[in-house]
Length: 113
Image (cartoon, rainbow, N blue to C red):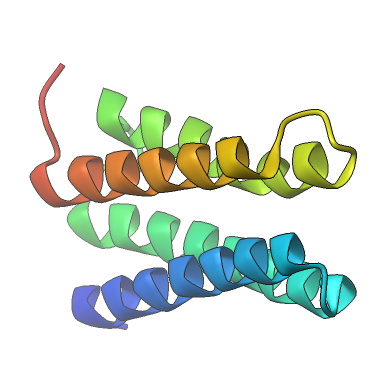
């Protein structure tokens, strides 16, 4: 598969993640929303590793890739914190937006640390 195809899948996965978070916070059909969230996480991690392999940097992953994996975990755990009311809904939205922006920055610019 081409790098562009992996990139497209990656973006689709992240769209599904945010749809799932939004649906879960609206409390209408939270189970289905969590399903979309899970599918999105799976698609984004598989396509992300596919892109790393296509770029030839899978063996020696750069720091930005490790940070993206950590942020992926944050996005994966946010709905759990929101559902258990550990953090308030507006804070969940803020954290998701900042995390998404950071993921986009790291993926687009691939900064050297």
